[in-house]
Image (cartoon, rainbow, N blue to C red):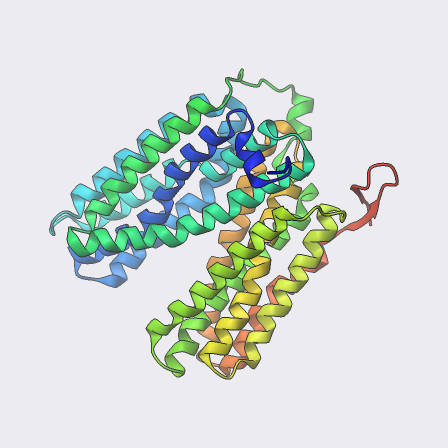
Length: 404
């Protein structure tokens, strides 16, 4: 096996332990959403109320995600992650107890969901920040990020399957208990695998230079790409359900989702297997354009099988786009901001998806489905406007950002 393989990434000192711990903790995020939805629906008898609980949980978690990541940057993962995981696990256990049987007031469920959103540990950004420390070779770092992104996407496929299986044989609240155990065990294992760091005490000048405003300005391209991808995929996901309903059964949308996930996994692994000469910024521009064009093709799909093929094609660019956005943000951000920078990419992606899903739901009642599918590509292509000018250096072959 060559030194540039995925195996070489996991052979780096501490990498396998870091990756394994992160997978256990992050699987919790794959199981918790469906478990919470089913548990609340079962105890309240209302999917509308379950939707409100999920909305509160997701909104609080996304809005506070960069702040929690900032705490990790300032005080270190060893100090911050275990208390966060403990608080998150306790609230999940509280939700499991509250949904074990009916009768708990609905405001209590909302309060517990909000508390869970407050404590949810930023495991993805912490893991990616550690890859930058463990893997110094640029090619291996690209493979590490690709492996991380593909693994995370697979967790979000297997997690709901596991939660659904538990709900079929036991109470849905058992899935919440499993989620609590996974996040607590995985997060503690991840925290102890991270090198001990002293808390940072930046001077006023350093604090000003590392302000959130400055970070967002420097990382405008990857953040725009993540937001655009989230918006496009969020809209496409809802529209695929509508498309399946009009061309067969709603449940048939699973084939489209599976094709998208499979394409994304293949694309993510291929990204890390190729030695790229193009700078990360140039690569992100091309990948964003490919993703937007692929989503636009969905407007021409005459049948569900064709839509699934187009979804697979679009998926080839999904994981590479997100991987490159994370990698570029990591390169742009100073070391003391890497966790928070990665969290902003997550936030941009999730915010884009939430906004577009709400908007496209209204558009489906007013516009033809083909037009809505075409519009789903618009935010992805619009993200290209944030791409700065790049040039290639003659001595290293790596891209350097130029103003303009």
